[in-house]
Image 1 (tube, helix red, strand yellow):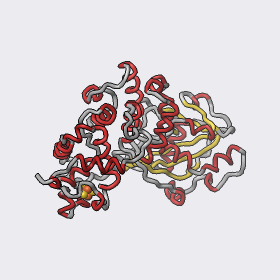
Image 2 (cartoon, helix red, strand yellow; image 1 turned 90 degrees about the vertical axis):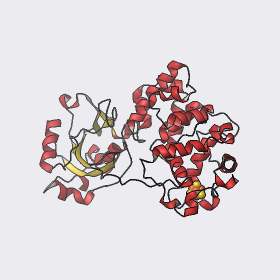
Image 3 (cartoon, rainbow, N blue to C red; image 1 turned 180 degrees about the horizontal axis):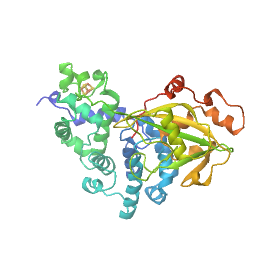
Image 4 (cartoon, rainbow, N blue to C red; image 1 turned 180 degrees about the vertical axis):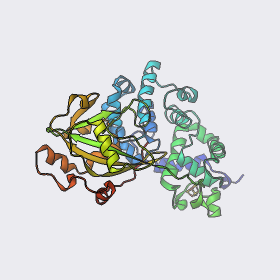
Length: 395
Ligand code: SF4
């Protein structure tokens, strides 16, 4: 078979040896990968970009330098360190996994044993096994799916194409030179997808596999992989209430330990439902939550996109001198300048960031600002001018 007829591991590895990315969790050429670093980065990279993960990875290593240190840490501390990275079930599983690894005395070295650990799935197990332990396996992430779809011109729409893509990707790893360097080969595939075979405008002229690539030959690289049309994401609506006492402390509560944003800190609020909350409904709910005289004012709204729905939260603000004991029960008061240490998801940080000057003014007993003008008319008419929208990926 002519050399150009099939993708050669040798060509890819030669390219990788010259162009590999420098990443904080990646071993240098000739070094042995640290399984803790590999595992931590792979969990963080699920649904998240390399750029977003880097500061979190470094922070985790500073706080928890070893898997044992992570296992020994209280869950609340882990959640605080993870706050902002989204998909919080990953953080809980990360902690459970660290404890399981600690009990085992170290990371297991096979795909099957890794797969049995909390939070390690069908992609992550071969990724850790290949990168950290040199097991000949081709982990198929989004980058590898894209490269494979183009190399073999597989035009079945995703997700139905996944089994065919996995089979095709596995053939790439059967090459003798790929089996001799499984860790580098897996990472070379990731790098090819991330730097050259990008979703838009792939740099085929620089690609070590341009000769055997069927999509390049057919001029269809930009069109692959084909993705099935996504169903319309439903929208939900809620309201949250930011109650501040005379010392400028904000009333917060912890979400239930399981479920969406489980164990994270939040502003008290309504349920999330399919229709917006009217002014009267929101105010009635605030009275039920906080049976005290308070001048609730809408300060705007924030939007967040979860995997399966979009959420718009109205944000209401009020002050009181002292938070009565019945209202405080099961909740906590936190100074505004201590919120950085709280396990607040991005959604709640955005809600707390709305009109930040208003809380400072309230804390100093200053005059009411424009952002805290009492509500009049309908909620939507008052809040429209201050709506703050920003789609953000989260889970
Ligand atoms: Fe991707 Fe182009 Fe390389 Fe094919 S030739 S694998 S489309 S970068």
